[in-house]
Amino acid sequence: MRRVRIIVFVLVVGVLAAAAAIFVSYSSFDPCEWMAQDLAEHRGMPLVMARTEIRGRFLVNGVAEPDLGECMLAWWRFRAEEGPPARR
Image (cartoon, rainbow, N blue to C red; front, side):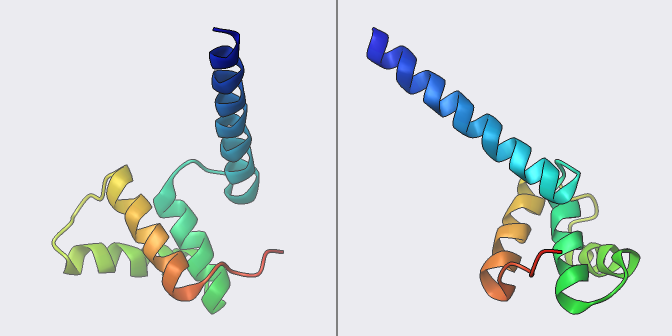
């Protein structure tokens, strides 16, 4: 029983650390915003233009209001194709 508690504790701490790292890096828990910030930084464009481009990508695919899952998958694909941007 003690071993299970330790494993659960380590997992919870790991999830909290990952969430804190993402929030510190992006100041948001919204994956669409993460992708917009990465795109803007990667291409050197204003954030408003990056948000508009992302919105257009979703609209071309027939998604008017992307949910968290769609934004997360799109962000993962973007990171896989473009690579992470150089952070400030």
